[in-house]
Length: 298
Ligand code: SAH
Image 1 (cartoon, rainbow, N blue to C red):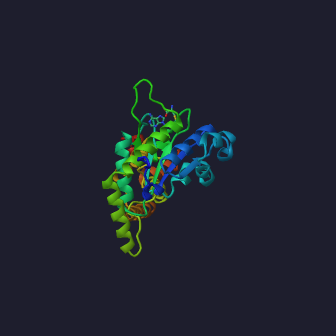
Image 2: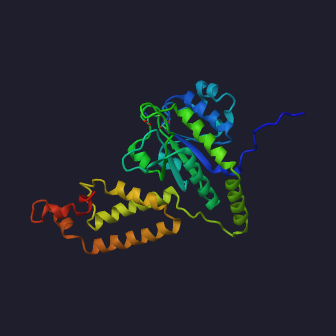
Image 3: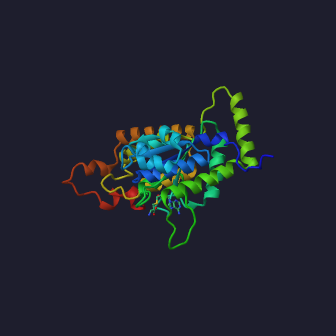
């Protein structure tokens, strides 16, 4: 009689989850991460600017992958985090500690539920989990690109795991969550619904669309005189955090870009007094407090 096993086929939805390693230094960690992912049925590995450019073919990576060579062979190497998360609707930073203006940390189990809610909401949704470089982890700016933050709780005085071990824990929790009957049911129902829909389009905006909005918003805020580019303070990081909490839909991004466009037009037609004066450095008649109105409160 064949002994009973707990291993089960991998839920299809996990194919829409990417593991992004930002600037990994040690090819051995890349190989060990590939192995960790392979055991949990995850296949989409992305390296952002690895220290060793040929990390995927490095002998140490191959040794630590211990047979999970397919993951390394199919992995993508990209020059920037922006490129790595461009098609994701939900970006989750994975960090031992929170960062300034970043989202508050959630435990892996709570994050896994959010991942499956995202995947079930629309077949076009994709999730990226972003891991930091070995020595310093994710930067403040990198975490600000994330809508959620995941921390693996540990001892308050010693909670930084090895990169591949962190990948292993997150991958395991995701797999267990995907096998939960209610998640499996939600994702099956969504797959059926999308078969019926003529042209499914993702509900939440991609990161490309969101970055385009932030750039446009920044330009518009400068033109209307709310943001002083010489003293931007923390206005944009604060707005990023606000919009990350809101989880913008694709149509809402279009709407906000329309608002930015009109604001830019209005600002150009009637430039605020202090920006006109700022172009003439000799004239000091404008009170300095007026110059920083927008960013003063940040
Ligand atoms: N000193 C760095 C540690 C980097 S370890 C820091 O404070 O972040 C490399 C990566 O492993 C981290 O960027 C993170 O993605 C992951 N990692 C390590 N320990 C973790 C933990 N306790 N919770 C979540 N991620 C962790």
